Image (cartoon, rainbow, N blue to C red; front, top):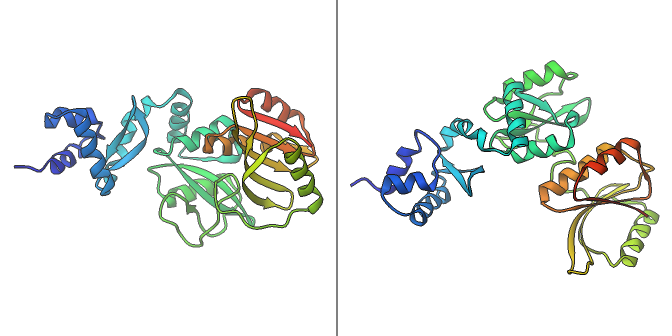
Length: 280
């Protein structure tokens, strides 16, 4: 008698699977089918998609990842548009995308891969179509950018030397940097006076902090992602960066600064939900 694991793996040769597919094939119920798929994913025989059909992810063989393309239409509208655009363009530059597209590129992890390049001594984030090789991605980037130093590092694929750290927009270990005492003191005083509790703290630069904070409210403490900037003018890029990080953490965003929003930043802030601005 064929083991149920073998039956499921044979099914997965032809398409990504849902619990309903397995239940029908093995003449069992959805609960048991889900447990079987979970077992195979736990042993790395199957991978689990980030996208969901209804309330369930897809289960697929690692070597059959390309079959996920058949399910792009189940993505939410914005993510679907982003995925199809990336499929056509193959490589896109993160910095030139609008904030919602940046968020979308991070949410369609089944179809997008982060790529970090070194250009003129600085690092920059690109996105490639998930089936595109690093070599082909490198060629496309070089066609649209100043000469890239050495090589591309595919963050979600096998890492190629030299190993590079991720740019700030990607959640990564933060370096310890000394921030000007006066600015830190003003920030801490503001938080103390507002009864805001710091849960997490990372120093990104001499003029920038990344925090997770708890704000008091009539219904209890609310958790926010907080970006603190010691900067005269806050740009739309600064707002976008904070917004993206908040989306990745699934938290509302608080931007704290001693500066002012420029015109584009004000316009962008008015369009984004869940982002608050506070000058100290």
